[in-house]
Image 1 (cartoon, rainbow, N blue to C red):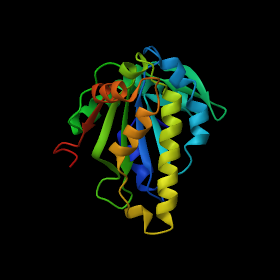
Image 2: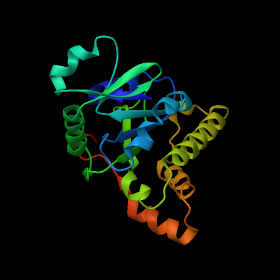
Image 3: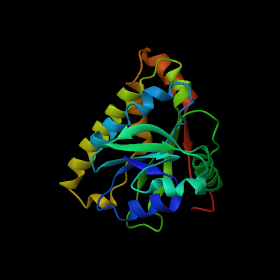
Image 4: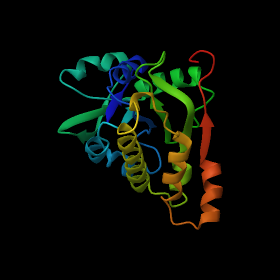
Length: 216
């Protein structure tokens, strides 16, 4: 799990990755409905995601001397602790990265907690591959009984199983993850609704997204 304040830094990290992996951009502000349950999972997700799934917390930053960067993004607030380091949050850093994502995707932030699920492409022209990506309105789902913790556990387990199996049969770095299928399977298993109601909620809360001409 990583902090994210600059898009180019995410690209660099995925370019340097030695393997194919699922990528999740979490747009969660501390004041959002249900945010505490998500933020409380950060430390566990840091260990649980491993090398086959990388989660970026948009608007968050940490590290020795990180306070020196506060003037770039306005006032930061210490929000949570991950791997013995305090993670800080800035509305300005969140806003700047959100604005950039809106400029390169056929997607618009709706003001509530959101997860964008995609995959990396270390050897591609773009190291972040938004083709076939999905956007999940987490607040919409949480208000209807959706469990973020269970969703992440299901998603990480599924991608780990698939990619570990793929490594034994082909060049896994060239493998394409079926992001929509994985997101849907994990989503449908993350709430108390019956299958019909779950399907309705999925179509209400999850949307396909893609890069526009600026990032194609």
